[in-house]
Length: 309
Image (cartoon, rainbow, N blue to C red; front, side):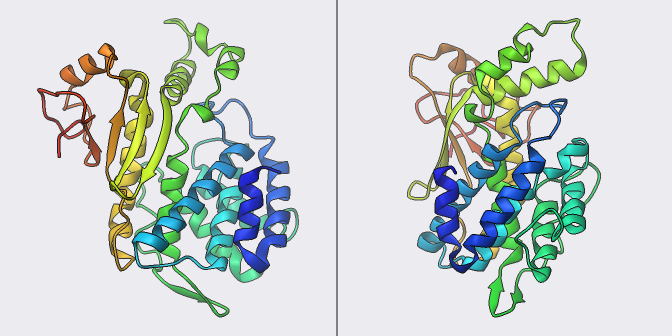
């Protein structure tokens, strides 16, 4: 059992045994997610545990900086969603969030153990809200802000927003190990390769070129450690997009707003490729409201993505 999971089980108090059962039963299913997914990056147990680890960090920030707190029942529901949110990928990537929720609803109590009857619907709502389908409305819109489950208050909309951000934050090289990249043959993709293979390669390289991601509530930013900025842009812009969609909730649903709603980049001083890319970056291609420039470099062209304060 990974360290993050052990800590999470202690974190949910009296619900720890049920979370252990749920994590075990869900791991049996997600192990069979097919490797034909469009982007090939990790959607398995490690990814789930990375979300749990990030959520624990968020809950600490909420307690220390936002004048709010996340109770044991809310933690349990969030961690349960982490282990179940990608289970729908077993049947394909498109619409997987909705499919994951349907699987949880249909199989909770049969093959997915640990959820009480009144918890199933809430976990399904968090699962459905972690990903937005093209052309459909954002599941966060219209979601209940506050519910009562037995004697526990559940800040459902806030949990769903934090969960979406935690999921999007698993975007570093940990999710795209180079050995698997080469074993899949993605390093040999060329002009004659299929569109799916070309897209997969871009996603893998994007993850590999983000070497670290840290939330800094004191500085009120998210630090991203970058190797090659041009190759990292797919993952970078996805994180920016998700951060932008949850920002309203993270500002309004607590006494004080979540402090880390801006992104800043870090790379080595001698990285000429990144300096050149930032200098000639095409502002028309991306429309991001949350990314800020590396404070060490000079960018002559201001744009929505790489801009000064």
